[in-house]
Length: 282
Image (cartoon, rainbow, N blue to C red):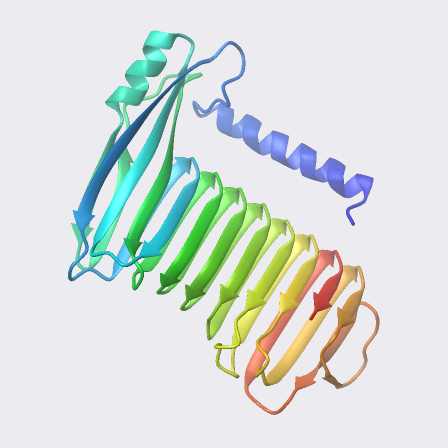
């Protein structure tokens, strides 16, 4: 339910940010840019490792947990430059490196030096053992995580975060994008967006004392808490309405844009906040 003013502010902010990045050798293939793509596949054993980390500036990250003992990576490397030859050279000189640090497997791209109006993007499609903790980061790209039993720390600036069938502690952050979570099991959950909708669906396997903090500035929040949740709940919206299908014992003052109360008797916490958007608890 963004107003025209909010939409205008979003557009100005995004364009301003991208313009600033462009001055640092980034380009969205505008102004006669040529593009060259290549794919690189590699793998590494995960025996004895507990965590996988991946960091890319420009590109999507998709990670799927499977019944396997290795990490398999398909990286799509894209070079952008004024000529075909230079775009190809940038892509071919970019190498994907796998490094082990303690119990962590780190995935990174080793890139050549970039002149003005040149850029390199790397998107990852990764398969890992299901019981693996994940740390993933991208600046311009979506993050998708599926079927993982481990703690998740995920960050993107311009992109959506989609996760499904995840068990563990979770910290999900995006600046300009939605957060969509399905069938997640967690005792400690945090999700934040500046401009985006939050759709969070907890499984009934979550502990009753689940601690969840969900925050967005410009977007709606749809929450499906676990049936056994018991504890404190605080909901706040500056320009929106609050709707709940659950029996909440309200404490103190409340109104259409603020609600504080409890569900059952327990030590759980649901903290929901948006500035411009409705909040629905189902």
